[in-house]
Length: 453
Image (cartoon, one colour):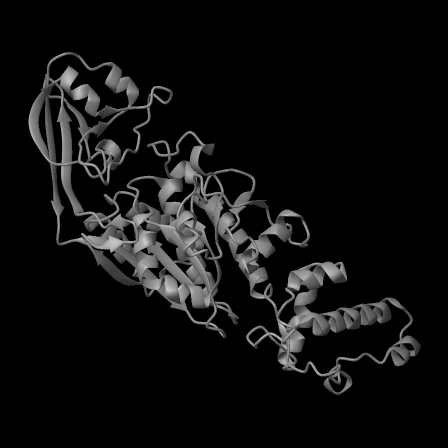
């Protein structure tokens, strides 16, 4: 299917237009149709945790199906209609077919006085209620009289919460996880930018010539979906997860992508992102490193709960209350900006390529120095100095040898490549060709057991 799209821009542009109108929630047909859409491009396997199931301290809610929701004014004019905007009804509204006076209706209306043209996004997943969301300028113009309400919804106790995942296998069964939520209807940056970034990253990573890690991709509804996923996979993740991050709100025009560290704050991803923020890599990709907090954020709060304490951070660009369109209809395709999103994906891929060599390698010949000369790795400096007119190449050879010796000596499974780069006073990218050559000579591995200390 990827062959139909010559570029990530074309793929994201088309996928956005197909997905944006879908009426999503944390359960129901819109969410499952959205997951099915991604399954055209990624071998996602969908699972479902049944309604009523206990998931840690939570109970999986009934499945919500909403055919349509409408509100008419006293003159019969249509004020709200989910066929016009999915945001027009409170997500998870109970069914209603009745008339109300304006005073009776007011407690069920939601608007944003500071953004009079915007329709807010409002949910009530775990407490039964109903209501409509509308621009404040429309709400302010409502006149006394009887208003007709028709919300064609139902709750199904034989449903459940779905999630979907797949794995791109690599040389190791240690996993890097990329996950995002898929539940908000008709929001661009806050909803679709994350899953669309995952789609493009799956396409890119699957084309890499080499993957040292396996890559797990997960799509789920926010909070309850990640908890459902964790209820089935937390033991696997504790055993196999090297690191991961939530990708959310990755569109917009903020100059840097913000990385919120995991609770443990020492995973390979944490380390790489901290280096990028400090400008220690030549690529200087725009990353802002921030420490973990359980206040605000997204599903990293679940992965980093003390019972799991998994090395999962979060990547975002224009997040939460940093832009006017957060959780309202101003969060559209123009704000998300497909071209800007692709640049953000470039940044994430560059960071992941550093993560690939950012682990703690092991010297496979740790008893004394390995014989480098027979492998063509030990330069004959005297010969070089008599053959060349410039001493620059000699210096380069000596510098490469020094770095190689440090890498081999520190490769005990306890030192990261970031540690080595700091000691060698260079970037991880500077060490990449040496690491790759040592791997090719079977002197170094990221998969071997650490040397006993």
